[in-house]
Length: 167
Image (cartoon, rainbow, N blue to C red; front, side, top):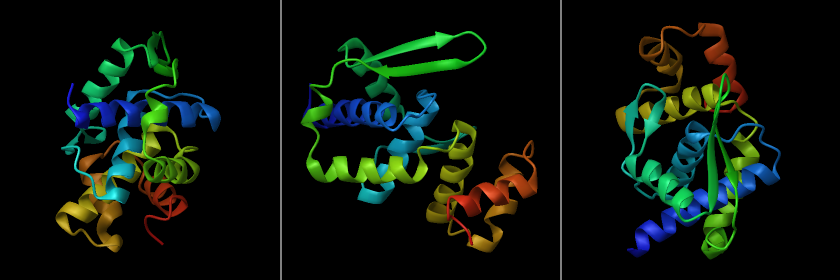
């Protein structure tokens, strides 16, 4: 297995472990995808994110979740009516992560870990379009609503303000 995959599996494992330590109620695939996106954004790492229905998505991160499960680093379970739950299992791979990366993960989870998966989808979508398409802060709420018209404008604005994406 190449070093890049090993690092990504370690990152996924550490995200799940730290989120559980911080008391995140539901750690699912969307949560891991969005936290990994925020970490990659902070560190200038490219995990091949593209925009999908629920915001930025990386097939590399999705693959790392599956590999982490296969390597017994995490449990991935479906709960009827609730969705996917990912729980830490072993921590040996998570401990391989460089300290500077752990520090960034810790900071991202402290800042964003209390947001729901839907809120993280809004937050990361806003950051993605601001970064990739130079959408100014004052137009990001309307841009999000064009992508996700099922959401209420005031709610989207509150989520982005609470996350300090817009002021």
